[in-house]
Length: 329
Image 1 (cartoon, rainbow, N blue to C red):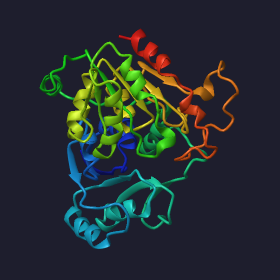
Image 2 (image 1 turned 90 degrees about the vertical axis):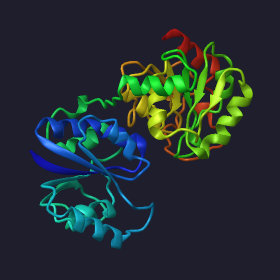
Image 3 (image 1 turned 60 degrees about the vertical axis):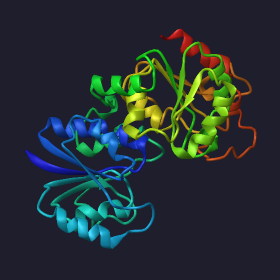
Image 4 (image 1 turned 90 degrees about the horizontal axis):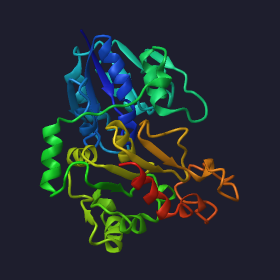
């Protein structure tokens, strides 16, 4: 069995969308070690095909060449293959410094000398799962779907610790790291319409956002933003009866667990980063033939609405989302 090192992306949603690639590599006999930043590493611990996860001691920004050289020396001789999933030059440095013979990735940021096998970057914004899976060199990547798994006992333990019943609550994930143009403004009004408990999940940076939602539905919600580990958040999502979110990392987590979900899109596009889940319902006014006037500005992929009206998410009414959740139990 050949030994392979995977250099993971730095965002949770992107990490989830790499799972089909790892499944393909494992199926053809490669033993997989994933190198990931600490906040992304738990995603790979929910992938049964991953044999080992190395948490990188790196930070956002800068090459941190000294740290990469030191880790490269430690990894020399361990791996036959490296798959570099991000497009940055710094992500390709470690496999090069570790002298891994076969180094696969996309062209980008002057990485020609760092990679031995280079794929041309596709134009526009391709579906991300196919983008990553193409690094396997195999065909049929357009049909891949990410999957995550946790032991039932682990899920049940986390759910019970919050005084909840598995399948009897809704997870609300109101954040979106990219910016406010991806955040639906009506989560509080939606939560107030629910007939079940709601768990608010997110990072510590989103605790204030979740507090505002809690204030609109104090008898329905519990705010756990910043109060769980990522693995505990995964367990709460896996045990939920429904997940409602923006286009975010937790949206992709819910899809990979196969949980019923409503995914709300505004400035981004479900053609690029859809929740790949047969139980997902996507709301995107750009594709709604009954919505007028048409959203010619979408998708803009901006962090803040450049036109100032934010129609793409402002006009998604809470009763519409509540009806979708009520219709799928």
